Length: 329
Image (cartoon, rainbow, N blue to C red; front, top):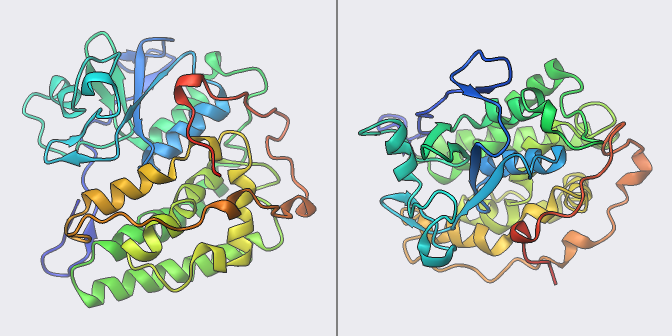
């Protein structure tokens, strides 16, 4: 991550390994159960997008999951939650090691999610947007029975997704890492204009596109669920808390209580990462105790808008024991 020296605007780091894993032999990396390990982090919204997609599609048996801890040093994401500080499958302490195996002398960003080939230990791709689409399309052979269609209307999903990415997903980072007042003001105004637009859009419909959950909902939700815990205060995105926005707060609770969403979230790791790692924003490293999380399990009333969460599909089963997160309360 960095900022433009002239404008003070936040610039997201480049994705350094953008290969694809395909089912038709069009890439060097074939779809194969057990061949790859998805490395994510509970703190990271970009990783959360792919982790939720994997859960909803039931790909747990085909693609294992490694979780980097919320804290890291100059070497970036580290497996400090695992015994011996080593990922039990890849046998590495820092995710950077897998990037350097793929690209010797690797100099781009070490980001999650990253799909790693287990045998070689090489990162295959860290292109999160393409990866979440490929899980729905290229990995169909390994989807669970009843897996939902997350791309019911690709054109509409991508159209609304662009605004969500620029103004909300990335928008909170543009607020938090701006190094000039003008850059911050511009990002703040764009964020809240988009939030108001989305609130209006969702006031009469349960989901963003159509009558079931799609990838668009996943993209928006990963930012909303972190909003009060991190972005409102830490990133100065503070016009309102999520809990003060009736439509978006109800929408976020609806999805939180939907299997595959809330069961991927660890609020403590979210706070530990944002407040503990971003020294330029929070130099003391103090992690706040709040906010109160009890409201996430309160009734949301969104059922009255109709819709079928999984369309013609079914909810996913419980997450594997090794992937469970602490319950609220």
